[in-house]
Image 1: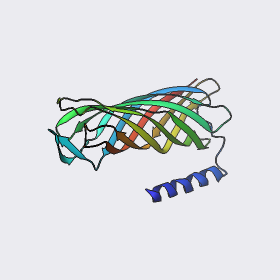
Image 2: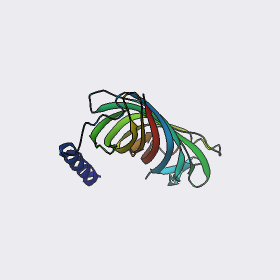
Image 3: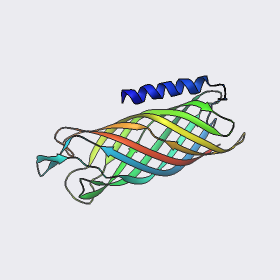
Image 4: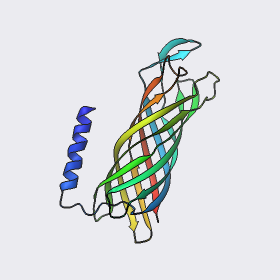
Length: 202
């Protein structure tokens, strides 16, 4: 993890210093978007089953979608976006559950090129929720998530009053589910969400 963060910081420094980078501003105003989401989740905590601790909590790959509303501040590298994700996945190989997550994410636009590519960094905090699923075993849980990661947008059109971009965001997250429903005393989950979307700026 430390090696990844060091490499990411070096890459950001190079991109901000490179002469090929032009003004990085994103949509330069209000934007909305929607798209496909895939969520990979891992936990080392032991799950509870009928009152006692059993095997490790297991999450299958999650598939779903997301919506996002954001604003890129004119003349600045900074923006702010609020994504909401919803994915369905298999829990402990036995039941299908719905995972929902939201966040308030500051966006730092690192570099933008004339071909429409925009490299940015996102990070944020927000609530997460796992529903009861198809088996009534008291696994529904509420948690909080913290995330940070890279993103890449390709602007298909960028005009004064309208812009369109295809984006891929990967905010690596840590989620803490409160209580003893998933495991004995709180459940720590590492989450790798992939958000592929089309965004429209106004």
